[in-house]
Length: 357
Image (cartoon, rainbow, N blue to C red):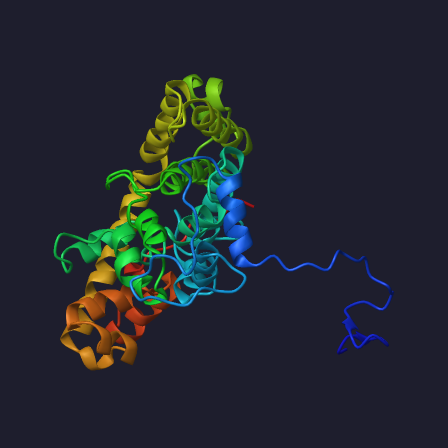
């Protein structure tokens, strides 16, 4: 099971030889950077050496600086923990999105746009994969819980860039796209960052609706005709239309924007989701339960900082360390910790939604 050695001194993975061959060639990072300069559109963000980082590094021999950022995010604990964090439904059932699958779908939408318009795909993917690493457990309700402990309030985008991913020493362009991906924040400084901010809204508007339809909360037939006429009723048709609209606008104007008809349909879809999914009484009740648990946990760790694990306790002041630790928890770990540490009543814990059989 160690492979299949040959008389050449090489080991092949499979028994049948010879394998398909390629021309012996090594494409160094410098060659790929030069290729970017000639291949990408004017205004795209170009990779250069080790990249612009807070702590200078030596360049990688094979990967561009943005490819290294993508890989660091992909292999980080913060990214893996997104698999256990709420997208819409706490304790997601089979096939319901998590923050991790959301990040992957944002990356798909964003890289499709970047590829078609000559932007830097590696930077786009890095921003997309990292954009939600600052989210706490239980969805957006966690931000309400943490607001009171963070000067100026807690925003997952800013927290993700400045606290969670700070140890990865990412390029400033990557961090800028992550920090500013929400529309309420300043415009990202790169076209790739702006693409991700559009891709985020396109992806969650479409897939959150799909999850809610699967859970029996709404029906696609409930969508207004003003939406379905432009982008259809399914996630597939909606993303196809929205990606196409972005590509068309960028390629024809040079601006990362969307035509008014598709932007209006996207805005109406998002508003529909807010009214029928996010702000329905059950969702608001779930959010209140999440906020209560997380607030109590942060207060407990501020009161008893000796309970904080070493890396959190040593790196920050007590309040920041407490928020950092609780924000990094998965849904299950947070609610289990509340049960164990605070004797939190089971009836006051958030509950997942059961899928119809």
